[in-house]
Amino acid sequence: MILIVYASKSGTAKTAAEQLSTLLGASDLVDLTKQTPALANYDTVIIGSGVRMGAIHKTAKDFIAANADELKSKKWGLFITNSFADSVDEIINAALSEDMQLSAKWVGTVGGKIDIDNLKGIDKFIAKAVSKSTNEGQKIHDGISEATLGEIACCFMEN
Image 1 (cartoon, rainbow, N blue to C red):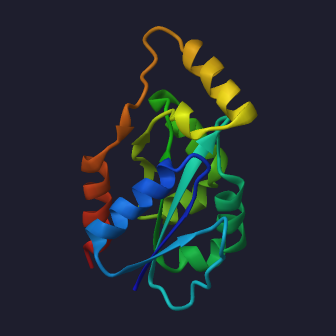
Image 2 (spheres, one colour):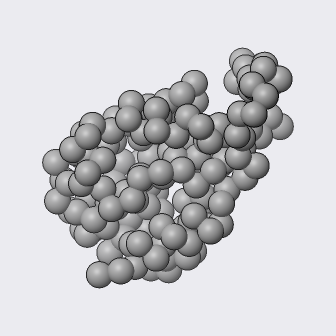
C-alpha cells in the first residue's frame, strides 16, 4: 500500500501530491499539517513538501526525523516544490542526512512556482520582494512538472 503525505503552505505541494496520487492509483493521501499517519500499514511512503526560505516545511522535516528508522525500512521518497531550480541540492542536503538520501528511492524537485495570489500578509510581501530580486540567469520553475511526477510514479510502481 502506498502513502503520500505532504506539507504545503501555498498549496503547490498539495497539488503535486494530488496529481501523483492520481497517477499511482491506489494510494492514501494525507496532509501532515492536519494529521500524522502511522506508517505500519504501508510499504511505500512518498513525502511532499513546499519550500520556504530555503528549507522544507517544518512539519515535513519533523515527520521525517520522527520516522527516519521506519522510512529506511520501506520504499520511500521525498519531493519538494520550489521556485528556484538552482537551490535544489542545497535544500535537499539541509533536509536529509546522507544516509536518509541514500535509503530513498527518489529525492528531488517536481518544480513549483511563486503563487503570490495564494499568499497573505508577510508571506505575500516576502514573495513579492524575492520575485523582484532574482538574479539574471537564475533558473526559475514555472510550475509543477508533469513529466517528473510521471517519473516518480513509474519509480514507485516498480517492484
